[in-house]
Structures are given as C-alpha cells and as structure tokens.
Length: 88
Image (tube, rainbow, N blue to C red):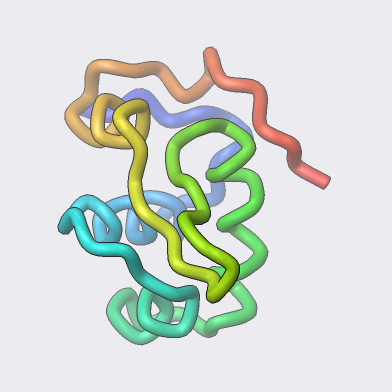
C-alpha cells in the first residue's frame, strides 16, 4: 500500500512514478505517451515530484528518472505526506 501525500495529483503522479520505476530515464513526452496523458499534464506534475525528491532531472535534454525515495514510496515504505514539494 502506498502512502500518498495530499499534495499529490492522483492517479497521474502514481502513473508517472510507475513509468519511471522501470529504471529508464524518460522524457515528459515519452512518459505521457506511456501513461495515456497529455505532455503538458505530465510536465506540470514533474516539478512537484522532483522538488519532493521522488524523481530527478538527469540532464539538460529533459530526461527524468526515479530516485531512491521514489522507489521507497512506490514500494509503500515512505509516506509522501512527510515530503515538502514546491507546489507552485
């Protein structure tokens, strides 16, 4: 069971984390295509997820990957309410 934060947008945030949990670095467009959401929707959610430490941007080309905290959340061992994302 995952402990979702009130700040999270569900189910989109979980879908993004699920796509990145593959271990691959992915762009917003690739994530959007794989989770059947718009690229703009995905792009808007990447900043809060990154500022919470669940994902990280890995280069200037816009690739993202899941962090250790992201994997811990995904496995149900981290309460996302304990994280302080930048939601602006």
